[in-house]
Figure 1 (tube, rainbow, N blue to C red):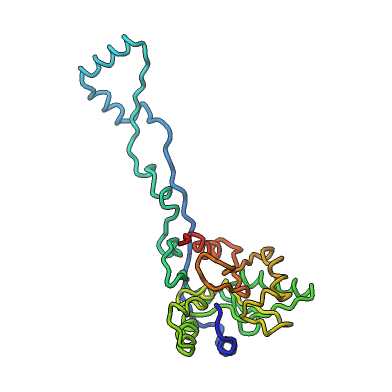
Figure 2: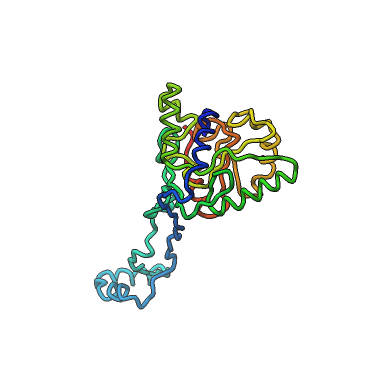
Amino acid sequence: MQYSRTREHQLSNSDRSRPANKSAHLGKAEDIPAALRNGGKARSDHPKSMVASKQLPLGGIAIRLGILLAGGAAFTFATTPRDSRTTPTSIASTGNISEPGSQSTTTDNVLNHLPYLEAPDAELVSIGGGYRLRKAAATKFQSMIAAARSNGVNITTISAFRSVEDQKRLFFGVGAERGQQPTKRAEVSAPPKYSEHHTGYAIDVGDSAVPATNLNQNFDTTPAYKWLKANAATYSFELSFPKDNIQKVSYEPWHWRFVGDINSLETFYKAHNLKSK
């Protein structure tokens, strides 16, 4: 999220001295199997079918026989057994279902920011400079900056994983210093528990050749941004908050997120369930 560079560098320096084994809460997402549907006919020897044929009233049989003989039409009757395992669920109407312990797939939010769980400490690894990401994201990020360096572009890390406590200082502390109401502050910074940085998949970057653009929208004029724009998808990174994003968060060309495995994909793509108002 966008905030004072001075404040950010202070936080980054404090992160460098923070022990790597800082505790965090575990969050886990699971795949949801599609509901099975029974489109076939009931078996003719199903007990309910047999019972139904035995209980058919004699008058009803005579009437149906008369219709068959008179019109020459053929009728077939079948009963479908009631089985809760094959009853259509609400998946078709809602489009998503949440399992206990999973990231919510609803559009519940605070000031247009979606809720995120802190990455488990065991999943976080160093990417240098006192910064950490989840293992899968860290591997791809380091490969990405190495590739950029080989092309003469130096991408620097400004922020990576942040705890809920870190975000409290950024949201409430900096907001108070600037005299910002929460609604205004949320345009540039997520409330605690609602930052992508909690996930261990989000990274803020800069261009070492143009440090004055760090955490500013004119970062998109730098060689680092232009390289990322052309190559980040190869390493499974995407821009979190492009211009006119659906969450109405300020444009942040420096803020990128990893979407290269199923957990990261499920974590972030609930944002795409939001509807424009």
